[in-house]
Length: 170
Image (cartoon, rainbow, N blue to C red; front, side, top):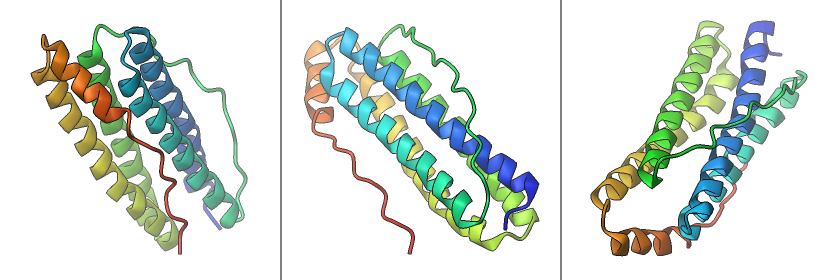
């Protein structure tokens, strides 16, 4: 059973992961609006990943005999200056996600809640990948600034991304 404190924070994370999905859908909408459907695909897949992350926490709460509390999802930012701005904000968002996962890990560690620490280790590893992916793509779009051919090559590349659900916990 989870403590009230840890349950409250995991529920906050469930809701934040749903919000993160909205953030990436807004980025996909921007990319579509500037005729970058491959970039839009990248962000749509990212939105699916965030939903899967929310559900991973959601399911865990019930596995630990807790109750999920769903809140209102805030409206995401919809105004972007450029595809570079989108990736910068995406990278910043992933850094925020990481800080929230670390905070959860700190609470679980303080409470000696080993099962939660195990779950959070998966998320910590995932965040290393997420931040690296966004940072790498941000650098590439910055280098491509002013070169439409390079942007469209990236667009074609990102159009091939597909959603792969996370493996179930053993």
